[in-house]
Image 1 (spheres, rainbow, N blue to C red):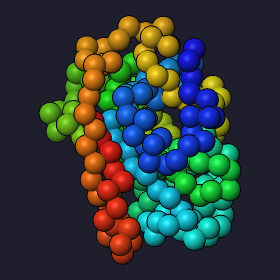
Image 2 (image 1 turned 90 degrees about the vertical axis):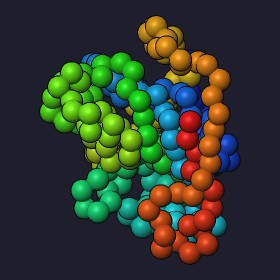
Image 3 (image 1 turned 135 degrees about the vertical axis):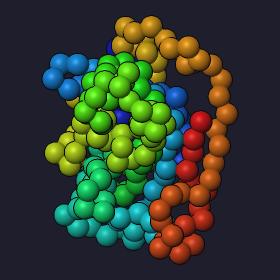
Image 4 (image 1 turned 90 degrees about the horizontal axis):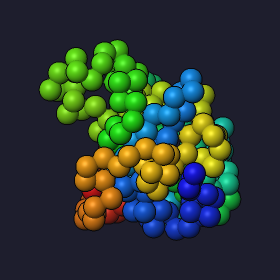
Length: 205
């Protein structure tokens, strides 16, 4: 299996954020591989970014994971109710991460839907389908990720990324693997971050 290894994450944040688009996040839940295509990301660079939890190398119990080796999952809670999945990047000690903002279900979608809504995919309303995994809190619920998974090694066997569905022995989905364009824009929900609020560090297919 061609799992992404640590050297993939040990690179500049914005390069990793762009290169993750189109790849596949795998979450192993009770022996089943829940697989989704990554379609939107955001970069956070602690040494210069006022939107980063560890701006200016601020170390707290919450931010300690940001200083971990590249290829570590950083999962935190926002608004007291939503978990958010990030991938720690750049060399160990540099507090940088890529937030995973949106996914598209590719394998075991039924289980992902039940995690998210408590119903099967066929029972989802049009509104639910539109808002299935299009936000960091939504995708964490669908992939059954909480702060319990904070600190997971992304090169391990519980949560990881692969280049292609065929790396998992799965057939490709229609359209996957075709060339795509990448759009960039301001990150979402960080208006408090002064000049950093305007950094064009959000990337999506």
